[in-house]
Image (cartoon, rainbow, N blue to C red; front, side, top):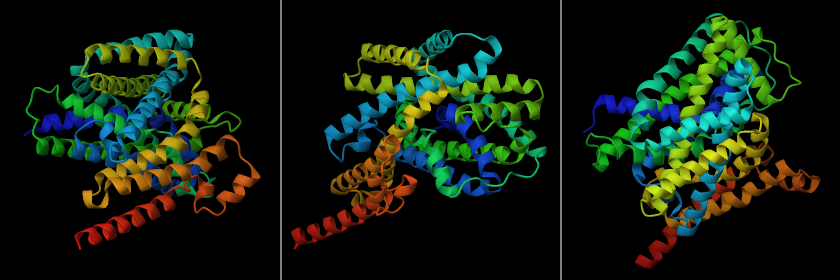
Length: 435
């Protein structure tokens, strides 16, 4: 059985691997725009940024394999393609986004350096951590995460203590707005990537967590602790944005990413004085760095397994992922968000249904059910993606007939119907074969 110290290190590591650039920047502006309805926005945000990701960790605790195991019931080909797509997305968008956010918020304001130098140094350090694979979880869990949490609690605590009345709400559907903003944290995708990373990391531990049940218990408890931490921090950042954000001037003509950065910087400086700028710089750098390390290491782990536990495959993948991070990291944070959103509308729903199906009992999640639900989700996600890229009146007329499609959630009810019908069909066919 594992010790409490191992549980805390694993939980802290999980929290830090989840908590990256979007997790820090999105909640305050979300709260600012939600105003007096910040509580309802928080509920929506928690669904896609906390509940679904932690369910994903629970699924990993059950499967104790790789990301490939998440989709293999659909088909081996589907699972392989899904894994490659998710890992490419991870190293092409959220990983470079961490470097871009670090440069724009922490490095450039202080030193005025070129983003290329920031990306080169940033991903060189990421590569050093990733190549020392066996030590990553301990370093992040023991040292970096406590520092991140302390800084966050300082900003939230002092901000709320000095808070005033919230702004009027600007969202028509606060819960839906919170759900969609939660997409941009990448946390559901992060769950399938980070969970696999944690499984591999436990193999490097010197303690005995080899037994299936012991490892399952450890991962589940660590996931719940990390989820509780994310809940507290997200709710705190959203409420600080709603209340203390009224003290900060936010230029609505700026892009969302600049509004997010300026609001968080303003809150930090107002709460902590000139020291707040330093705190924010260190905070964003650490939060982004730990996430980038987890993404690159998780991707390298997968391709090492794909090539029969080849260390050369691990090293080559890590180097290529870091080079991709340097290249894409030259884009500003807003450009990366614009590229990311339509991709998220496509891959996020599939990831969510795979996570949920993998935690259900086997009798409710047969291969037939997996295939029916995933195919249905894929089909009904297409209008969301097309509507974002190239909206048209004919497409709008079509989506009017699909419940929740106007909120980019048109896949939910069809997926639920497919789940029920597939289970009914499977039960009926089983009873006939038995008789």
